[in-house]
Image 1 (cartoon, rainbow, N blue to C red):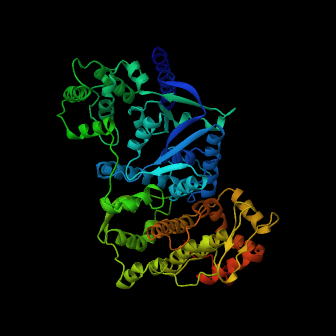
Image 2 (cartoon, one colour):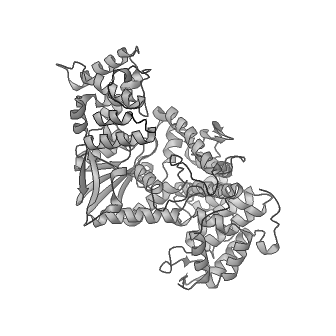
Image 3 (tube, rainbow, N blue to C red):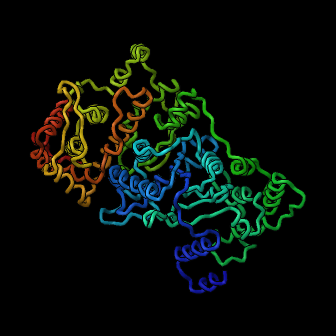
Length: 602
């Protein structure tokens, strides 16, 4: 603390001072270790956020995401764990429930500001580090990779924290996360903060890391461990925060900023509360009462509930049938079903798009209505972008017609999906992996773009060329079904000119970012994600596509150019050319060869 007081005299910038504070606190409260030959409970949501945001080179956020690049990063992470004989168990969040509704809507507004900042940053400009925007299919891609790699995982019906703590203590493992709640929970083997888990510096089968234990924290601040939940509830978390108007900061001798002084003052205050002769529950009651009285506040049920969340975290139950819950837990069905059935509410996370147009989510409005109809048959409240604000709307669900219900009873689920997303063309000559993406593309283009602009047509051709492309190299095979039987394999030649040009495009920088192009691709992704979840709900009448293969934003933005499209079309040969021709026949777009004018505005 003496060192920090001396630093304060130099009037260093706040971020620099915060770095010093963090370094000092870490040196006091954490221990340096190496991780090897052990089990590890991983907060799944924290991991996929961290891997996407901290990748090197940085993964795209402006063009809708880079799922192949994200897959590469995730696979490298788990390969490192395997090399170090670390056995991971990944636990992911589900729906957070109504108790955090106000907090979640507030976060939605903050995410809207971040998405707008990213969209408005000049192509050569630097997006602020705090303005991270997660592409819409990242969680689906992450779960797909876990399944492919045989990584043990579970998707919770509610928040993952209770199950993470329970599993960690049962298996006597540490927890890996960035969620600061794990500073408060009693995790017996400690908490590994993801930012200090240096898996890219693995050496000799060991990963450098820093481990935190609650006991070390309590010993340093002379705090009874039973009061950690009280400290969390008054300091501020997702459930509660005590407005003390600087009362606690005034009691602190810390040289830090006001927020640091506030926390230090709270810890000092709680450490002085007389707890003699009390059990843990009574200690918490007395400490909370003293803290509230200290700032002139009355006892509040909100704080008691927040404390209970940390004392005895409870697993979330659902109104869904047990077999449906099992599908959610196995990652076979989106957690949105619990939001719809249990709370009749959906939050539509803001995307990077053209903010002068209506939200990209409106493109998938009809698909969501059927999704809600199959689950509830009633209204669902959606929170999403309207202009530059977050508003809520009552969305009427669409119940399947008697015809559709009859087909459901007959288990002709593919026909129900056909009716909902309105595709009518024959998919027989389309590879299985492309059937659902093609249906979505038909819905997106034909039903939403009544008078398609040249830019939209270019986006369509870019998507078709991307679907034909095989980004993973010649070792991957694409199976063709139907009348081309026996099934043919599209073996990609290393010397394939089309693939070489596509790879070169992927490596280029997007210098001409167009809002209308970003918006069109954002609409397509909204339709794709909702159709993917609808397909899951209907027990996959169409083959599940490989999510990591669905979209690569930087490449598609470069592809959405008339001259580039023409050049690439000329390099198509063999089976790729045949599939591209079949895709164009299904969609019947105005082709670039027909001379679509590029003079029309966005």
